[in-house]
Image (cartoon, rainbow, N blue to C red; front, side, top):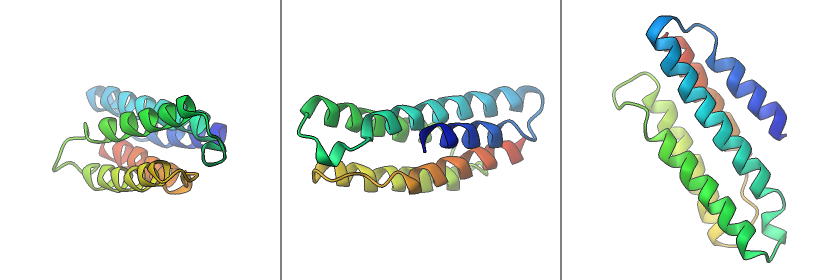
Amino acid sequence: MGAAVVLAVAGAALVGCDGKQAVSCGKTAITITGDVQDLTDSATNVGQLTDQARRQRTADALKKLNDDAKKVHAGSDSAKAADSLSKAVQNAQQAVADGKQPDLGPIASAAGDLSKACASAG
């Protein structure tokens, strides 16, 4: 799932951007794509592992993803998509806190929506 998510998110973000907006869209897409990949790498089977370090890496990846989503400017067309991404991340954070496997599907979907919103802004 990880590689497909990364390619889908990156590809969506690079369509439709131009000039200065393209740089902003590209940076947002690359950051979010990297965050999703880091999360995917750390969260694989996290609910079945007792390894505290792995749980911490997953929690850290979720926090970084949420922090990066919050960098999207309020009032922009992308802000609603960023809010959806933050909510999906918060749900995953709760699952990790409860010792369960986080559902990455909503995060991947919301990250793709954010990239599309960024791309359409360009």
